Structure formats: structure tokens, C-alpha cells
Image (cartoon, rainbow, N blue to C red; front, side, top):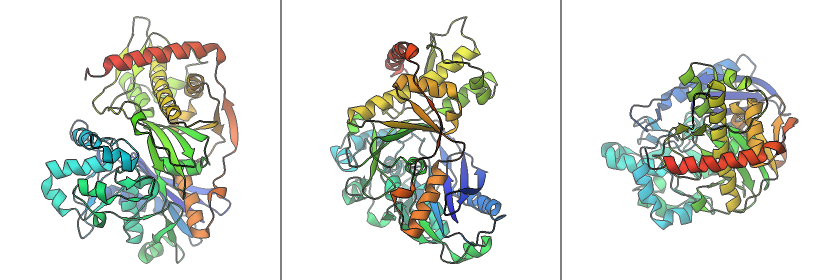
Length: 478
């Protein structure tokens, strides 16, 4: 058997699978986010360990003696700072924390960062967070001995090893993404060196062995290896079989992602597209990332005092975008804006704007932001020939119909089951334990396909045009 752990922002998920990749058990544990100041987002790493203990407790209702490997997936970009004794120095600064926007802008003005990392230095990335700590918490910075990404702190607890893998490391701004190695030059620009970084492995490689005391505690067999794993989106790519050029998925989770696999390295930082290593050797991927997807819908649901699922289920068939336009920039935006200070808006509302119309506007706003991502990927030369939908928002047929129509691309919906980060991490565990490769990362069976509504294509083109005008008007107001 094999276990996949996915350390998300709001919870930790574990999946237990057998060698045929059949899911035998699942377990979850909730996590909390602290926002002590505007634009801050933090978590206590001790909560991740407590959550891991909770999911292992749940899984241990099964006999775990046949477990051969554990794979890791996790939220990217977080800055987990440890001293020389591996003690946590401060709460982890998370991916959706934008306090370091000034430091990120200063770094991005230095052409070396884009040239070596292949990406804009976004405020959510790890390197500018360390620059912020250096400037605002110098006593903490002086004690930093190791910088780990969130899932790699879990790995430290599991194995005692400081290890990262390529896909997650690419989101720090310190990785030479083409060469798949840490850049000493970029580290030096942040006052750090190679000694502050974990050792690098590929996602499908062995990163260490499970500590004997943990194995005994939950009844694992001996010699359980821990795979390198992947950043949450790269692991999801493994989970849904997006491992070759032309394959892509759209993820409607807290954030929104349009993820496309690439056989080569083709960065274009000016588009604000993320170009990262994939979780497999000699493979890369590109992502357009928006910071609020289901987060935007959940915000609106809370605002009107209703359940998000109930809001979307009663919408009926797809309609043309109405007068109301929603800009989903609740906490800044990445692709294509790279703007940490832009904030959202709901405009064009009138007496006739009821809850359903406003709900459609929120879904359309996220849809048009994803279209912006598709256009940015296309500008780099990336073509999408097949598109899968994953994440909680993919349960809404209305939302997927809107996206399919706005992108003029059919969207396949996998059969019921979990093919996300935890499942991809479990697949990477199989690879690490057995030496298997991309051939086991097959595409899931498809339950149905959502096709574009040709009658509404022009209306969605017009809606996107009004969305872009709204985007331009809002930019700079906040």
C-alpha cells in the first residue's frame, strides 16, 4: 500500500491506495489560517504535525503494515524558518500573504531574477518573504539556519531530513528552473547561501526513510520510504495524468489554476505565467494562477448568508453574462496582472440584480480571470489540446459551462473520485518505491464532457471585454 499526504491551506488530506491505485481509505484534518494584519496570512507549523498525526490515527483503523512509501503534496511558496536546532522561529508566511510586495518589486527590477528563475518575483513567492523578514524582523533572520516549504517541514518530521523537490522549489524564486538546481547567485542576493537550503531531489525519487518511532506508532512496516512529492498543482497534475505537452487541467479550489504540462523549458516571465519544474524528471509545466476562485464564491455566499453550493445549484442552464461585472481580486492577483494591491469590485448592479444574478457575476468574474490565464499561456506558445476540471468548484456544471464557453474548449469531468494532490502524491510514492515512471500517471476515466455553448460564445466574448475594462478601471483605485 501507499499513502499520499496533501498539505493544503485549510486542511491536510491523506489517501491510502493499493498497488492497483485503488483508494482504500481517506482522512482529513482541518487547519486554520491567521491574518493578524492586512495582507498577512500565516500558519503555525505545529498545526501541520498535529494534523498529520490526526490523519494517521484515522488511517490506522486499517492494517498499515503493507505500506511501502509515502508521497507528499503541499501548498507552495510558504516560508518556514528554522534555527540550527530545527526549532520554528516564527509562524510560516503562506502563499497568499502579500506583505512583501515592495521587496518582490525591488527583486523583480533586477533582471537576474527573471533570467535565472524563469519567473516574475511575485510577492507570494518565498524569496521576497525572506527579504521582508530580513528588513522587518532582523533578529529572526539572523537565526535562520534552514528555509523549508510547508510540505518539506512535514518531511523533516517524517524522516529527519532537510529535502525539497523541484516543482515546489521552483516557486521560491531561488531555483535555476532550467538547470533544476539552487542558484547561489540568487540566494546571495537575499543574504542566504546553499547551507540554508534543503537538498533537492526529483518528485519521483526517494527523499528519506520514515522514522522508526513513527512507523511503530501507527503499525507501518519497516523501510517505508518517503518520495520527493510535488507542489500541490504539480502533484495534482500527476493525479489527473497531465504529464505531457498539450495536456492541461483547470483547478477551481481556493485559488484558481490553469495548468499545462510541457516537454521542455519555455519561460516567458513577462506574461506573469509561472514556469516551473514538474514533479517528474526532465519535465516542466506552466500555470496561470488567480488568487481567488472558490474563495470568491465563498466570500459572496457568506456576504448573503447562504451556502455556496446552494447558490450555484439553482442557476439552471447557462445564461449570457448580465450587466453586473465582478472583479475577483479579493487579495491581489497574479496572472496576468502581478498586482498585490488591486482589490475586487462588483459593478453594474441595478434594482434588477438579485442574488442569482450576482452569483452568476461572481462565477463569470472568476471565469474571465481564467480566460486571462489561457491567453497568457498562449502567448508563450503553449497550446491546450485536452482540458480536465478538478477542485471543489468543478462540482458546478454551470461554472464549468461558463469556462468551456469562455475558453471555447470542451472540459472533461473525471468519474467520481479524488484525483488531486493527495492522489498524485500517492502515485509519486509508488514511483519512488518501485522505480515506475510517468506511465503509471494515467488519465482518469471521464464521466462526461462539458462542451462550449456556441450560441453564447459571442456574449461571453463581450462579457470578457467588459471584464477587462472593469479590470483597467479598478487597477490603481485601491
